[in-house]
Length: 169
Image (cartoon, rainbow, N blue to C red):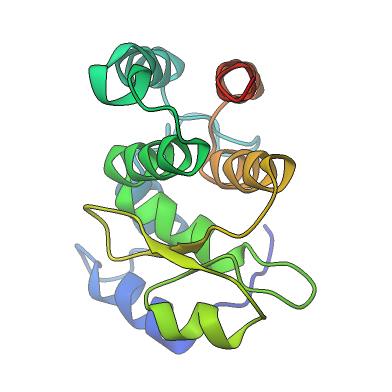
């Protein structure tokens, strides 16, 4: 068993999702995040096949293939991750930040005050904003970190990084 610290708002959210008296936080999170409960002693990975399908659909979509802007592709990928599992995305987003800069937030102002020239952009279809004034390597780091925190397999992460990297050349 590991101990983590979470903010009050997230704690209230998790507690509010209780289905029955005595349900522990791990069970609530496993249910919300749709994690396999049979492997409680190891790190659970959500269904790899559905990941590959989600990313294949995104990478072959007209909106992605016709988009030449790296920032637009970055935003499309973040929106796809959010839509895949909003609860997992929320947890990943709250833990992702640099030493001085916040990368994602639920409002533009938070990002603007976390650094100079952040150029926040709204992730369409989500309650999140992301900084856009970063190089491609930092964008890949953000994507990789979120996917990893969401429990997406390393193989799928590498596939996404390769497609995303090749789209920038």
